[in-house]
Length: 117
Image (cartoon, rainbow, N blue to C red; front, side, top):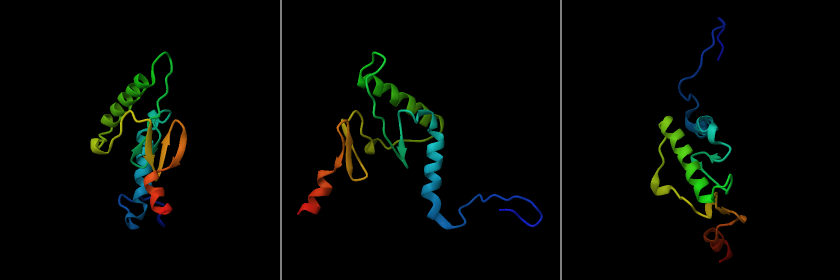
């Protein structure tokens, strides 16, 4: 915010309330995790690590390496994972009401069942 005297002021709080908090949080997480963006995209506080075999390493070895790099970066920035909500080594994962895996994206059967009934 600029004042008549030409000074520039920056808000240190959210003057419009928490309505912009999700976007601010997402921007912060995206910035902090930019070094692992090539193999660990994120959506707000959800991070995905779709690992493939490469450089003579199996999918499992690559997944472990990716996890080590992600956890080291999280530790550096004092970010913590809730292990109860983590899914490791899965062939498909639930994302926004769909199941995402090697074979693409399809609706979560639990969500579709309600519609079909």
